Image (cartoon, rainbow, N blue to C red):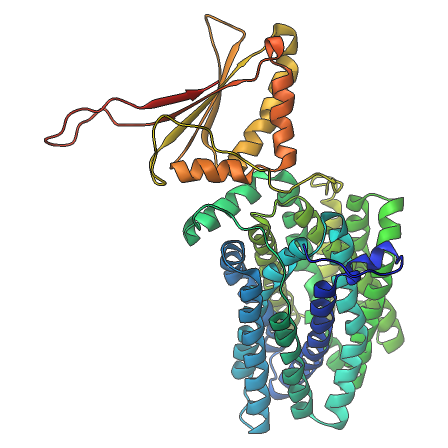
Length: 548
């Protein structure tokens, strides 16, 4: 962890800002976000003026979010396998390149709808690389207890900028023209590049060889699929993104067609959205204390549905601004809650991949939603599209009954210091498959508790990399139970044990406490060998190593 500076007591919500590295990158990110929001206003309005297609206008949102669906999982695996700082630098380079190219194309008068979408897609690729690495790095830079406050600060900071950026973008667009807006964005994108270059933080390195990308992606997807807390958060967030993106994707059409406004009105309405998000963000800690996270996210979906309905029915700029403030509040409460849920449920070895899967599916949902609601608006009407989105958001709120977001657990997801067992043989890193057997002696009265612990044990071991996990009871000696699983290689076995967190180890301690006589369970390791000899060779015995 980066050492924090000595500061007087500060509110818990601002505690992460005491860390100089987090403070520098966080501040630079807000400056870059300001430029991105100014550019977003300019892009959306420019597209609305050079293209008569409602779908092309809505696709601006899809172009910047779709890359996250395709690249985030790969970027997460890279962030967990390589330097997260390096991945952040690569992402910011792509964003700066896209902004600079867009500014130059507008300055030279060479601009078209497809060029705008293409450069928006390139910037989206940069965000796809940067976002998982930056969010995963928060846990490297800060203490675990500060992660919820840090995620809230990141969300609130962006939404403070959101309350300024769109209005600023509208003013720049109206008085100075698109070129000034794009040039401002290109310069602002250089700030986080400088901040990351100047910052360094310590990351605990693994003594094991780096995983292949395909294996790393598979393990990340396996962990996410087995972890119910993460899985539910991702499903809820994806459904919310699919429905709620209609607010932002259709806003340029609302301003142009229903409110008969221009860039300033568009900027003011986005500022209303950001203001609501800011108020909800600074109130988030208080809201979490008075109600559950699941209820907060349900109410947030209802707030966004209310926003869609009001936008569909009003022709007043003031009413639309109030509606967007309500929608902004629901937006930030949902994204903050689901993001923190994924972060706190993920150990450090896989957090980049779980966050990347989260971003891939949520951004994919937003990209699909932009296309769906844009198509409805073009083929039917803007009002019908907003009303349909409101109905979808009410269904998302109802999904809270079937897919509740669990309370955040203050469990220790830090790595456990693992010492490999002593062996009589010297296996090579790729020797395998390795068969692991753990024998337990369990009294009859403890079987129910033992099976409860074993259900958790199976989940813990499987998501860390165990294959073919089974539990057997000896028919001749009923007190003897044997847990068996495999890993493809010896390195995979070592990696599995390094992945187990302090909280995961507590499951093993509870099982050990159920042992007859208080003796520890018996661990046996063996390497699987085929009985079929190679041509011209003799059959080799199956090596076996055990440890009490």
